[in-house]
Image (cartoon, rainbow, N blue to C red; front, side, top):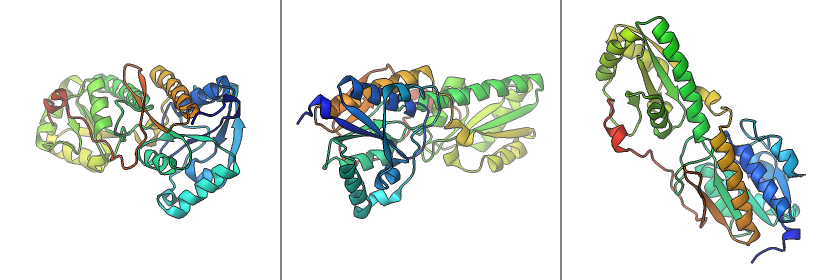
Length: 320
């Protein structure tokens, strides 16, 4: 059942790992709530913050002021208690105490399951925002483009130093466990042929041989997912087999804090607006996104499994 626009009170929260563009989703949701005559309330600290009844009204102007920022200005949390009936009951009680009519949940796969768990009690919209790309049902996630761009910029800089002083090699470790989708996306964008991901077998002797040959002109760079293991140890092993220095570059959590790209800002705002549109009609929804910028509303269902990396013909042909 649709809500009278002037009474709609929308809660907005970010959950799980932070991702570039989360603030754009918040801004889009707040903007659309105001456009419909309703009100948005920011929930601080994810589902844990919801259970603690930590929320305050936020307007579109305030939300837009954070568009350029990385991460989430509402803060987030990983809250295992949401998997328990006690945790979900605490969230339901808080939503009632705050008089929230509908809820926007922004996050990755675990957040999607939390959103679905509360959708029997009120309309819930889930927007996928994660650099890990671990959500089924969407082509892209808000944050992925920014994280890939950050890694590619780092690789571009490594190429400069590699060509300035040839004879060395570099191993770049991305985030993205437990799958290798992010590492594959980074390697594809950066033109790197040698990628270590859990979805494919890899031959360290072959990678070492290739790096030794490429080091002559300063372009010896390989990419690995954190899901493979310890980058320092693997770099040492590659160096031993190749007979050259192999320097590990671990992007770590700095990759999560990449400046949001224009694509993630634009897509995030559109997703936030679409989420509130669906909630105003009284229905729960999963906001599916495409790389072309399309935003589609789909049913929000429980039991979604994490996505796995898509192994394209292009990635199959790469040396590993």
